[in-house]
Length: 120
Picture 1 (cartoon, one colour):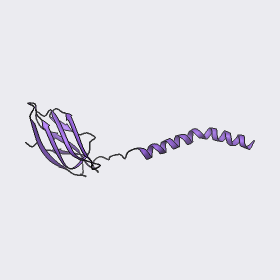
Picture 2 (cartoon, one colour):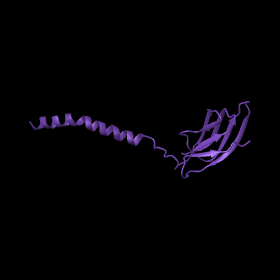
Picture 3 (cartoon, rainbow, N blue to C red):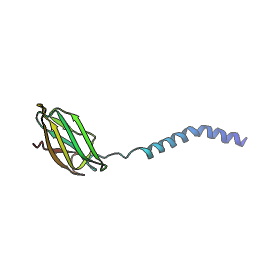
Picture 4 (cartoon, rainbow, N blue to C red):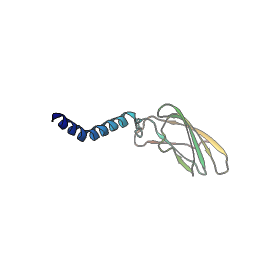
């Protein structure tokens, strides 16, 4: 009789145990979240006539990364986090390429985006 009581208790608890184990596994295996503005910044560039923007530099994990997207006058590397010196190349409406560089701080108050200059 006691074994039936134990078996009934286990059959009621196994779904909860399984869910708890799966949640723990997801927590352990999920990549760490980037918190805006404390481990790198997004890059923004505003250049009249800009049609494409390419950013190359160190991301918030220290790896070299390249962001390359079509844009219209303004480009922001939304959800791409940079730190240190980055190279920015942008294409104008005539197809000409221009380049500049920008130093991206690891941390800044008030914003998680650094605005870079168009350059030549």
